[in-house]
Image: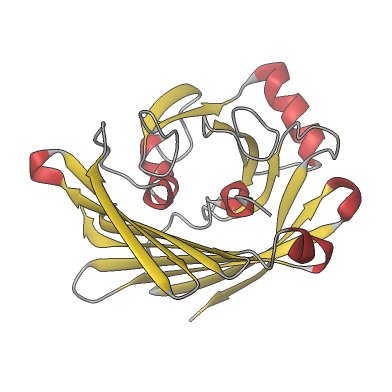
Length: 248
């Protein structure tokens, strides 16, 4: 199913462990489980990092999506506790076709270059361009860095950040740490009594959700335990739930 990976982008924000593997199941309204996603986060001895996330459609969703598989990778450096990407890559496979987008961050020039590769029936086509905006995060590092941007979750209110892989026009992402009745309502909706609750707008259409509105529950360690993509027309919400977590 298209973009199911986007409902569980916040996987882990603490940098203490060298390798973390998180597995999520994804459910979609009346269809129940429609896929699984696995995230791997590594910090190397030379202060570089690697993030990889792979989402696989299952059951009926696999049939309807043509055996869709999505994977995302980010590689770069750890600078003053922040993940700073050098390369961000997204790969989508379905119906025997492969679409690849590779983004190269030229931070000193404040430029991001994109290479598109399409493979169909063994034939490959390529094109390249520079994005019309610059962002110092990709969509993966943004959420791994979120703890810093929100002052270890002490910040309350709304922040506007930017990341490659979010809104196609300018990369804008709205992040809201709710308070008062809005927070209470969100807790009741997610069915959780504790954690750090966020509302995130990716600002691009995901399924029939016009803005990509996400509800997130994150524990004290920075692990997202539940994610909900709101208001998908006809079928209800899409939910991602953490089912397994390993430290290697």
